[in-house]
Structures are given as C-alpha cells and as structure tokens.
Length: 307
Image (tube, rainbow, N blue to C red; front, side, top):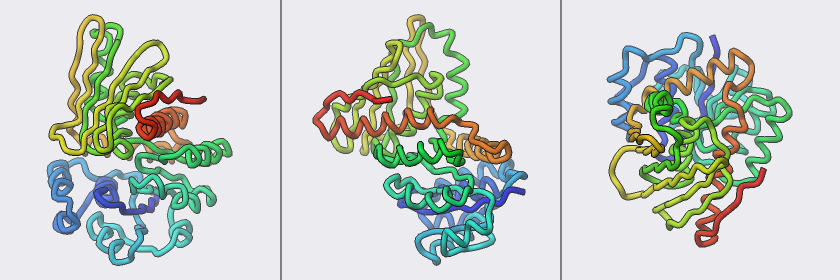
C-alpha cells in the first residue's frame, strides 16, 4: 500500500478533498459542500461506484492551517493531520501538492524533493522561468517530480485522438474556456498538446487583455492554435480541430474521470520508480504559459520560445 500525503489548499481548488476521496474510496459530502464545493460532492456521489484505488491511500494532510487540515481530513477520510513538511516526510511514500498557486510551488515542494519523496505538483507547475529551471535541474539529478493538468487524460481528448486520421492534416486548433490564463490556460494547452502528441511550440502571441486572453501559438510543422480564456463567459471547455478533410468539436465535461486517470498515472509512476509523463512535455507547456503572460505584458509582442 502506497501511503500518500496531500498538501492543500489554495482558493477555489478542491483537489485536496476530491482527490483524497477518489483515492480513499469514501468522502463526507456535507463537509465538502461546507467548504464551498457542492459540485464536487455531486460528482463524487455520481461516481461512487468507481471510488477507491486499492494500491494507495491518502494517509496524511498538511495545509496552512491546522483547523483547515482537520476539515479536509474529514472530507476525504484522511487519518492523520500533520503540521510540517518534515513530519509528513517521515510518514509517507509520496506526496500530492494539491494547490494551484504556482508562485508557491517551488518552496512548498523543495523539502520533499530534497528528501527524495516522489511528488505530483498540481497545475501549473510554475509561472516563471527561474522556477522552471529549478525543477528541470532537480529532475536532471534524478528527482521524481510529475506535474500536469488532468485534461491530458480526459476521455474526450483520447476519443478525439482516435479520430484524427479522418480529419486529414490539422491546420488550425481553437480552444475556448473560462477563467484566467495562468491557472486555466494550462488546462487548454494540456488538452491540445495531448491530442496532437505534444507538438513543439515555437512562438506565442497574446493579443488579449487582463481577464480576456486571446493567445496564438505557432508550432513546428506549421500547425497554428488560438486559445481564448475569458473570466466572465459561460460554457464548457471546448476545442475545435480543423483538418484539410474534416473538423471536430471536442467538449470536455467529465472532470471526475480525468482526475481519476491522472491519479492512476501518478500511482503507476510511483510503482515504476519514475514519472510516466516525460518532463519535456510539461516543460513545453509551462514555457508556453510563461510566454503568453510575457506577451501580454509587452502589449501583444510575439515571444519566441527558447530551447
């Protein structure tokens, strides 16, 4: 049995509760709703039959506040509350850093990386090149660090991938979603990159404005993509693939399924001793996110990605 510690939480991110429930196989819906996430309670109830992963268990919780940790522990049926990274390191086999505030990931992850504990870091891994260089250097030393958006494992993306041959050569991809570029652009990019077998991005241009990202990406081989993320629009995450022979709309709706498959990939990686997801794929996506933010700061200037 793999003992997993989970670290949370950041505002608006219910992963410490939902991911613990998916792994442990049980949850307290009333407490999850009390934390402000009734939608999580709903999808956990709807998928109760497939909750629980026999190879692992979330045994320890650490957050910025002991009272919050106790509440999270109740939501995901976590047995132990700890008050420091050092305490968690002594007790677990692996860690999930279930926060989506990338500016804090480096310092929060460092104790576990230094201790050689396998760690999954919630999306996005980081939001500046200095932190990205740090993670890359630690991985070069053989440290076990895995990070991605769960949209990489969305069933809708896998289905779209099987249908690509019927579309012919893909010339253009458009992706539309809600919320901000840094935290949610990574979702859209992960989906697009996954569907297209991780093409190499060359340049990024953000012609939008704060809260309304309109980002054009040029890839090696001529593929172009535009990502549209607006804070105040409705709708699902949507990706349109335009080929020379046909086109396809992909709507990504099943959060539970992609979360579960992401967690399974992390657990399989622990069992195999290294991340099954190559870091170079995560690195490309994070470089694209950072370039999109830099382009916006420079008034829509095209940023060329360095390798």
